[in-house]
Length: 253
Ligand SMILES: Nc1ncnc2c1ncn2[C@@H]1O[C@H](COP(=O)(O)OP(=O)(O)OP(=O)(O)O)[C@@H](O)[C@H]1O
Image 1: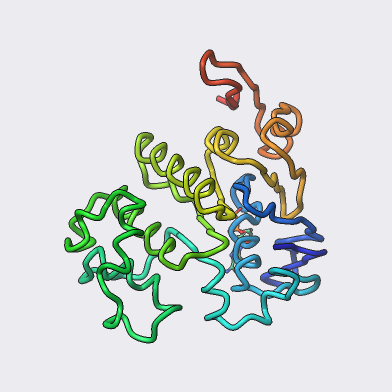
Image 2: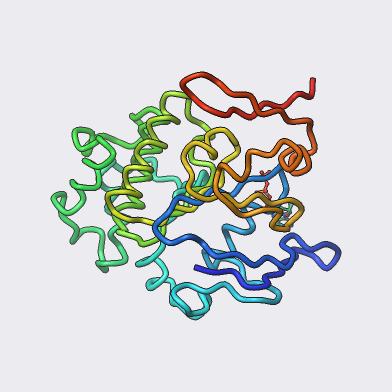
């Protein structure tokens, strides 16, 4: 998956994404980081083909993503976002079955057995008959992840997946994502706000500012106080914590 010289503006006045060229590393975990309004979600939408660039191209397996039908796109790409449709009445297994729709024409024809493995992957097979709303926020997030897994995608996109999770659930979810990446060889693309979490779980990061790619590289190459201070516009210090490693702290009061 590749962005070539991509430009995008919501209005004529200002470029939201500017001359952006980068390649998503296949089979790895990529996190997009940067301050609020930097353009992370817009970039995700361009990669997903939900927005079309004003100029430049977004390619998936050498083809412009815009050339793929929504069904073909859904067969390759799954998304876990914060904005879920309201499925208040649905049980856990029904939500996961929605992820199988690219392979079926009707929800009713999808068996429980077909979705069980995806619920097992997120450790929720026992909850499959429960209403979604009876689960905790962290469990619900795992149900959405199971629905995305049910698409058996090559690329899994997650937009701020840990925002509403406490530190334990956030840790568990990240561990699960890493496991999926290794076991299923899925390419993971995430927007993460917690820079330390991003540094810990990612193979590669894109640091962006005002719609431009400031730096693409491994976590080790991001451990640069000057670079991070410039990107986030706050004084940043990197400390070393025993048994953890480097940790980014912001010094602004
Ligand atoms: N639908 C829209 N219409 C007009 N402007 C938009 C729209 N969506 C985003 N923007 C603007 O584009 C810029 C980038 O927004 P985007 O949501 O991509 O940033 P972000 O890095 O994901 O931010 P955050 O960390 O706050 O979620 C911002 O200035 C934002 O106000």
